[in-house]
Length: 170
Image (cartoon, rainbow, N blue to C red; front, top):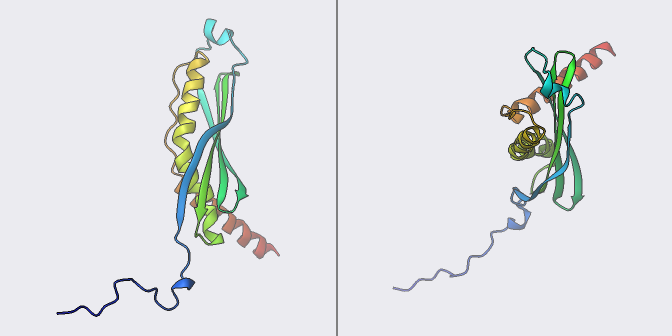
């Protein structure tokens, strides 16, 4: 019995019109900036206020298109701890990553930049904050995990509500 099929696969008609495969690849993760301040040392160690610490935690992201499909995403984490009226410490980390993102539509990029990439970067930022706080002489600070998908969804909803309010007032 003979096989009459061609052993080399031929592309189907129209195959060149298929969109490129979607891909996100981590090229590099690095700390772009790190800062630690303890403006009330050594007083915080010698005569600490007898109140529970208040932790203020802020997140932000920024993005730079480097070239072609290469993007830098920066996750900025700022933690300020106060005890009473005094600042115990302020720790800031700009945790950065170079990501190749290709095959995505323009309307898909905000999700990648504001949710996917920060999810990748946050564990590194969390570790950097913990390390710098310990080196500053304070007890370890472990930041709670962040659901960046939910944060991004809230930002989208807030923008939508603002746009509707502006349209209604116009």
